[in-house]
Length: 231
Ligand SMILES: [Zn+2]
Ligand SMILES: [Zn+2]
Image (cartoon, rainbow, N blue to C red; front, side, top):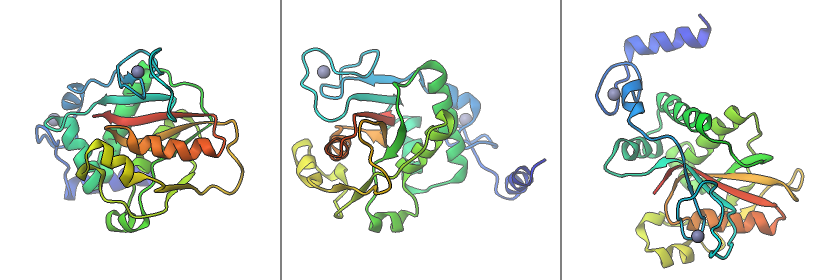
């Protein structure tokens, strides 16, 4: 057994993990409960959010900044996925990362992602990062990158502290986010590269569109929106 494996066994003895859903000891979400989630993937038009097979624009929609909208599963606040996302955002636990990894693996076994060069993520403001100690979108990006054997690059940073989006109505969300992000990657340019942009939950898409706008104005060719759950 590896050192990590031994450490895991010791942790299991002293700090057992119980399934978030059925309380069975062992995993953060046990295999049976994980099976209740539909991880076959959600692909939508990035503008009207109508579901389709690829996540591309539908014929009648005017392209904005995101080129495709892809999620692992549908979001439901009242359901297990709501609890998973809530825990992931507010009380980070290492074991939950294994659950997220299983979810992404299951999604990838059912679907192909469009061609891309690198993975980036919606940044948190430094102040919120310090409050939480981690960025849940970055964690998802790292897991996806590991599975896809692609690099994670931090391309964006928040230029100002914005209030949580959930407090706003759709129109106000856009105003809240205006010029909230800037391109922060200096090592090489991402000209003509295709990038996957990760956020934890995709709701109206205004955060992703604002991030994608900055990426596109820095010559990124394609921005594929990827989230764990589609609200
Ligand atoms: Zn369970
Ligand atoms: Zn559409």
